[in-house]
Image (cartoon, rainbow, N blue to C red):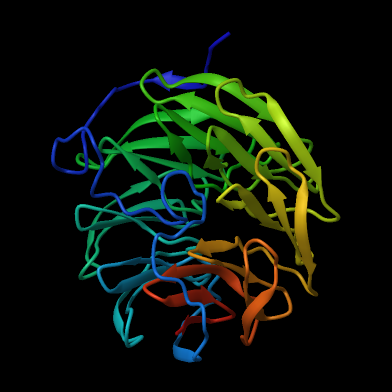
Length: 362
């Protein structure tokens, strides 16, 4: 039976400032709205070394977003940054007020960004000038999903918010069982998001009604990674779940030896995930059978990244590893000054945060 998640107030269907049905202009982190962690770009197969290192005010755990020669990311002191891809020179910075754990979503020359002070910002992506802000209850960790002129974003206050990015107004608020820290994922006409009670929600975009809900035993931080009709999530119950997106039923589960604080990456029939204790697994996407695994030391919360014939994994041992995706054999590694967070691949380079800095490798 379909149930309502929240109270419908206004139904709006605007595209990214141009009135089109398709959101061709939206640039989203994590490989796109399915959050697969796959980057359609030239991989870095042979490491030359450090291209540049940009020092920040606070620690950088934010996965960077790269577009039109600019790297966008946030830090834990509440700053948003825009940095030149090639030189590492600062274009602009903006003080949001409290921790900015994620990158923005770009749409029509505007960077849409949230921070833990409970502000949802629209900034000029070239200049950093504030266009408008919306204040909500609870902190915002990760960037919005933008579809049809609407921004979907979550907060610690048990809410999924829907905002009209043309009028800068909230149009709906969806209540969940617990706080959330995820950027919703999207497939066809459904939005998928999770909460800290271990719930995975599927919501119909047009009616904003619940299609189904799946329950893990403990909290889930990120929205499902979507691949070939299946959603993959990792939970603090030390399990990765494969969920049928049509029915919300479990297809398989894989038990690890530690909590999973990030979402898997998935491509070419393989699911990649790391536990909080730096145990990296490669699983068959259809069956959940383990193909290979790699164990490192230290705590880590980073999502893997895939590009071409390389999978990138940040370990708690302060190394970024480039591995063969089929075998796990190491191609190269690079040592940073701190835990490696959320690598991103672009144009034969790899970008990641570590301590109070953003690194660019070539």
